[in-house]
Every structure is written in C-alpha cells, then in structure tokens.
Length: 447
Image 1 (cartoon, rainbow, N blue to C red):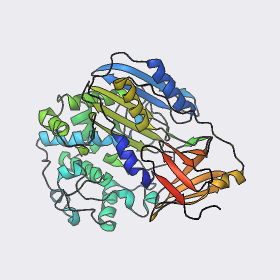
Image 2: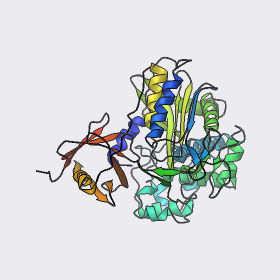
Image 3: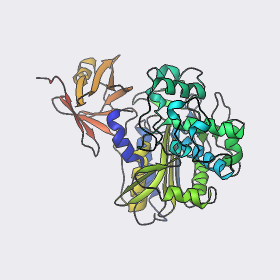
Image 4: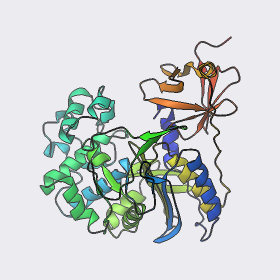
C-alpha cells in the first residue's frame, strides 16, 4: 500500500456511526446492485454480511472459491483473514491473564531477556501497539525473507538486530506486526504448547468457533483460494510462508464465526466486564486489546482490517444499534473499507449508495506513455510511473509496485487502492479522488 494512502486508509479503517439505530428493513436489492458493480469491476469475490445483535440482516456472496474449478462461493467457506487475526490473539492473551498464566503488566524481559532493547516493554504495550518495537516489514530484505521458512523466533531476532526501536515504550502509537508475533511466542511459553493448541483451548472451543483456526499450507478444508486481480486479468496470489505472519496474521475464519466472536467480546460474556470495558472506554482514535477505535462527530465504532496474499478482510462493530458488518474476500483488489463505509451510510442513514462502473481502456503503447513520468507528492516522496509490457506500473518511494488501469476521462484505477486517480488534461498532475484532495505534480512538466 502506498505511503500517501496511510492516513487515508487509517481514516477509512473506522468509519463513523450514527446516533440512530439501524433500520430493521432496508433496500437489499440496492445493496445487491452495489456489490454486483464491484464484482463486475473485478474488485470483489467473497462474502458480505450484516448482523444486528445475533440476527442476520443481510447476506451477499458472489464469485468463485477457486477460479480454476469454478466452485461458487458461499458463506460457509473459510477465508484467510490476515491482521484480523490480532483480535483473536489479544483475546487469548486476556484469557491467559484471567487464568493466572501471565499478567498483562509483565515485562517482555521476563519472557525474552535476550531482547535487551525491548526489556521494559510490557505485554499491554504489545497489545496496544505502544511498545516502540518496529514492524518487521521494515527489514531491508523482507520480501525475500517472506518466502523462506523463517520461524517467528528468527524473525523477531532479525528485527532486534537490524532495526532500532521506534520510540520509548508507552510514549507513542505505531502499528507493529512484530509485537503481535511476540504475544504469540509468550502464549506458547506460558502454555507449554503451540499457539494453535492454546487458541483452540482458551478461545475457539469455548466459543464453538469450529471453522476458525491457524492456517497451514495445503489445508484441505473448505477454503477459498486467493487471487490477485488486475482490471483485465486474474492470477493466483504469490506464495508466502504461512509460518511467517504467525499470530499477527496467520488465521482463517468464516463470517459466521467472526460474528459469534465479536458478539462474545462486546457483550462481556467472554472476557468479562473488565476487558470489554477497557476496549469500550478507550479514547478514539486509538487501539486497545486488538481492536481499532475511531470516532467523529457522528459517533464511535470498533473493528479491524486484514490482508493476506490474495485475500482481504474487514470487520466493523457499531455499539449503537449493536450491529456488525463483515467483509471477507479472496480478491486482493477488494475495496473493503469503502464497502463497509457505504453500507453503513445506507443502513444507518438511509442514504442511497452506488459505485462507479469502470470501463477499462485498451490503449496502444504510445497512448500509455502519456501517463508515465515522476510526480512529486512532497519532498522526498515521489510517484514513479512507467510502462512495461504494455502495462502501466506505479511505485511510490520505498513502496511496492502497483498496476495502473486507464479508464475514461483521464481517470485510472490502481490495484489495491480504494479510490481513483485522475490526470489533468496536460498529464502534468495526478489528483487522488478522495476526501484528501491530494495532488502530485510532474517533476519535469510536459510542454
């Protein structure tokens, strides 16, 4: 994901909640048409469900569990959920605290004295991303390491050896997958078993989450297969060592199981009043015990996003009205945050929603070259756009390369980005069509 999108993505991670309850009836045909358009645009394959309390209000599924065998998707299929693993990991740590196997105020030094730079970090700081421990994605050779059989312990050691702490523990917030890997390793220590076994004993079995678990290569259960989709083609998602994300993002689940888990967390039946209230009383925007928190003039809500090669996941819990929106997709290009935000507008506010039908252009190389060049976002942050094998590619400074697809009126769709880009008529500026209104200007303008 692009650097310039970080603030935009965080803003859309948690959308607002109206002060009124969701309608008991709403236009399901409108929601179907809206999601059908995403599907037809090559941006969705998966399941969307909306629950009020324990009642299913709306369910949509479309696409294939496996493109090669053309098996139709339905809500019974399991999806990889990426970072939506973190609320489950946090729930396990809270249950271990309640079982006196650890204390959330314990220091990391008690479990890993070798990590001297992290000695004063507490378990609570790991849970809330306030530890200052850097994310492993900042390792210089991370892309290569992600494809090897690197163990979680080895990954954390690399971070300790190669990356300096981001800040003193407890002084700031910065999202860290490394912190959640450490939580999993701590759980294994205190339980003297695997994370998978501990999670099953303390979280999954008590909540009867039979279709949720830790992912393994070549698992034969009813899994959707993940795909990367450009506007004009679909391909299998690239390989990733499933041991690597570990307890920061190595789980699978179904929409029904995620609903049951979410209700158990927020109705205080599972973690008890103390931990549930800890989440509900936390300041927003913020993060507490595995849950992101956002608030604006309309209200507050809780949730998490997740992504794994070929998969996207999103969960939003709205306390007012007690309803949840769950998006699970085996389409890496799925605009999950936009879908949740738009459904919220319709369900809570009664607003009509729609998404633009994307008509992709088939341009020759000469026409494609108009889009190329270097565009400055801000000093030190540049978009480099070029053509390779008749495909426009875009890369922001120090970020991944993304495919770009021209549509009408100088607009472009970009893979894994939830809004459109628009070039000026002279192709000297790129405007990002979202609430930020950000403009990147060509460094060497075309005369």
